[in-house]
Length: 199
Image (cartoon, rainbow, N blue to C red; front, side, top):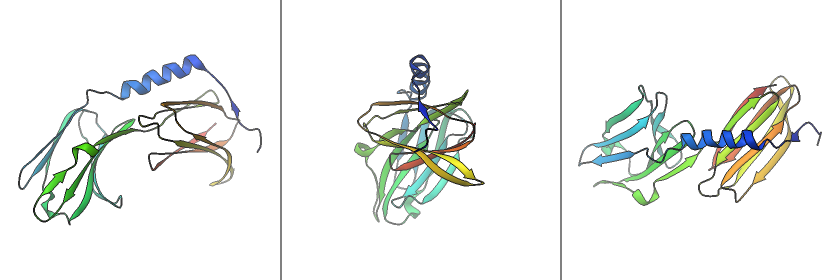
């Protein structure tokens, strides 16, 4: 592997970035689900304009998706009785975190599985002065794979670095990038996050 990357430690800056990430992970955010025979209402407190609310089936197919229009409280009623029998999930995607609320639809009722509600955190990347900073909270100590590709031709990338990180509560990495175009992929929580960088 070409020595295009040099792992650099910048402790003070990483602490500052971690503080930013922790600021987004607000424990006071509330999701309130109310339901009756016909309607289910979702109330989200402390949302920001641009946050996404969606309903997905057990295959990950998006059935409903809406962007929050105003910062503050989001409230919407859903008639879930029209859905086919099966397992679904409400997903609330914010800047750096995703809340999931699973539920099951059957012919007689809709059941929410409160014990399976979860929150996972997205990675945060920042590119500054030739350095790439990657931070991520791992609330479940989940593994993450960071891949860095360099552009070798228009739209064609070659992997120059891959790193598996396990058993970490917080991921804090800094990479030095030479001049060029890069694609960064981060695999975690059964999702892939991609960022393109022109250095």
